[in-house]
Length: 297
Image 1 (spheres, one colour):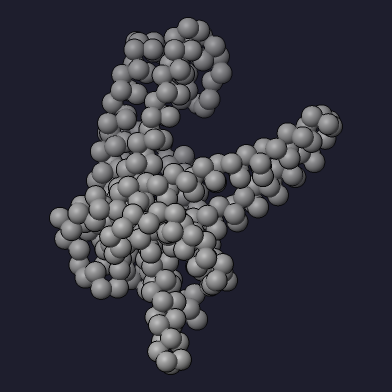
Image 2 (cartoon, rainbow, N blue to C red):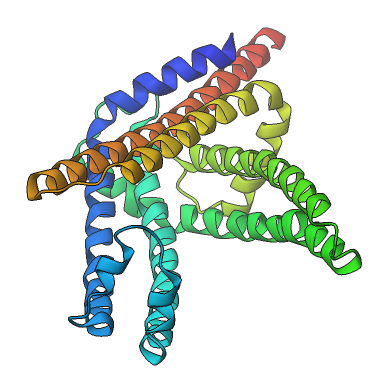
């Protein structure tokens, strides 16, 4: 019952926090635009006025890349450095915006104004950035050992067992998804607990997240797993839909852009839904603990 209630309450709170979702969408969109401008310039300078884009009209063309030679290598190098910078800025931006979203999802937060959203984002930025950084490193290390290490060992010992390596990769990927869901749950509990506290208790917040995750593991994990599955299904459908759509006019391109932005807002809403559900779970557990203490007294 707690699981269903948390899912419903989290959804209602995320809808009420629509202003924060729109602010987050605006910042992410500006980030994508700023990233896309130099990328577009690099591609234009590399391709020039060639007819290479027409060679990709019917699908991926390996010969087109082999013809680029030095230009292709420099383009790939700039793309790699740009993606690394985008990843770093994306983590920083996510930590900043998450503070405002979590603050707007508290039970007694009311309707947070844009100024209140930015105030909360700045207030919790360093705390959330630290939590994200620590847990991201843990997730990356676990991903390396769980997914790549077993498959690599099998390929080195038995190069012909490609099917076995594939099976191990699938099982490892599924296991990593479960572990990643737990790490996400720990991070959400840690950030939800940090909201409303003045001191930068980052390590204590992570410890609280771990403790609360495994104290109420079944209900908490089912909530996060359900919402992450919804997000995964939506992402799959979006990529399938966009991949099949080939606009043949300017209005078609504009419509595709608007639909893609709508899907992006839906993804942000689902992410905020997860934040709200975990925040609700934490408040319910704290309320139950407080009532038990009062009864014992």
